Image (cartoon, rainbow, N blue to C red; front, side, top):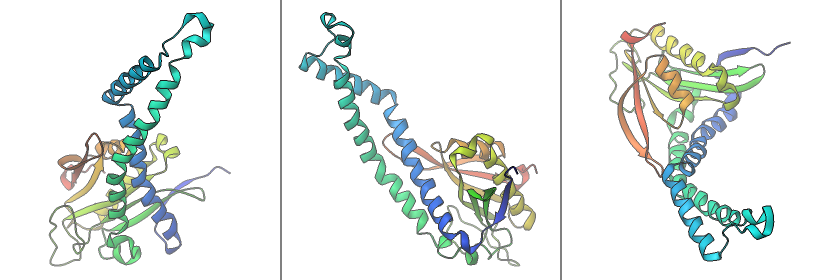
Length: 250
């Protein structure tokens, strides 16, 4: 029988999977940042220049008198210098992304997920399953009590603010090619706007390091509002994106 994808509400038994996935989602940014750093043109120029100097110093330029193997003599220099360059990139990038991960994991919403996400009818924490396998999650907080990236107004008649915040959004890498993250995001956005007329905007902090998430957000109408900070060795931007109710197309 073929496996079926389904979106369901968070249950207490999901706690370990959720905490692991949230931490993994933020630390995956470090791996992406490291790959982008070592493949950056400036890094490649530095690597080639340093390796060439090393080859010249060691007299390891290709020598035709040794046959085919003679042309491979510069390779040890290039390989040996690639390792410290990668290590330096990771050493500079790691504190940024470890801080981001710790900041997210320490937020109140993860300390008691059922309690925090039932404060408003527009809030919700959903998991994406493929068959019996957990493959993704999304959490939207529309309660006015929690700290948010921008000031939020509380309705006098409900426990819902005018701005909901997507606090977590993650899909396992093997399933991103099917664009299943867009279905998950669309499900959450529809729930937020349909559950209460109070919510006028949905906000999320995103990064160019999570292309799959940015693509889905853009396709659903989320637009960049402002840059919040820069992280990593090449200063990758974190941006606040906003979807306004008037621009939502169910």
